[in-house]
Length: 203
Image 1 (cartoon, helix red, strand yellow):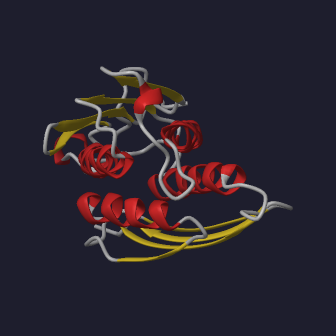
Image 2 (tube, rainbow, N blue to C red):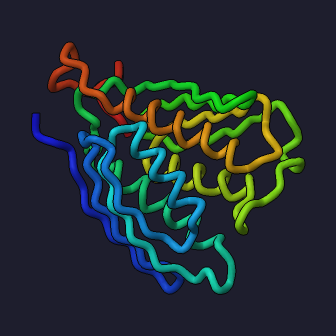
């Protein structure tokens, strides 16, 4: 099978982003952004999703991290969309995964439907979680929303046993996201050469 790869660049007045992606990789990464905590989380995402990911980012973090965080989500979503192709021929399309860390469990359910939608739920008040290194739970929300809409995916994320330690919460989500997306992007040999939709198209 030909490996599904994409190179993607996004430049604006706020950020410069370069991505090399191999969906059918082994989890190798080379990631450098101005947001250290996000670097680590994207390494976990790629490792557990078995995606080879090279990501280089320059951003206006002297103002704040908002533009950079959001634009990485946009660019990463577009890179996956490009690698998979518009019609996503032969993929399983759906994926789900859990990732526990002590008493916290992150769950990701994804449908590569072509339609961008994002929902984030917790069983505890999000305001109890303190920001770490300038990154907050609301930044995760913005990142994943940007990723889902630009990938064209229905993405539902849930954290049970929300920890006050943000690092723990983020790890459970990025690990489960990687595993769920790996599952959804796998080629099902029974659907070889066909669009995974009863409509015959993904739009």
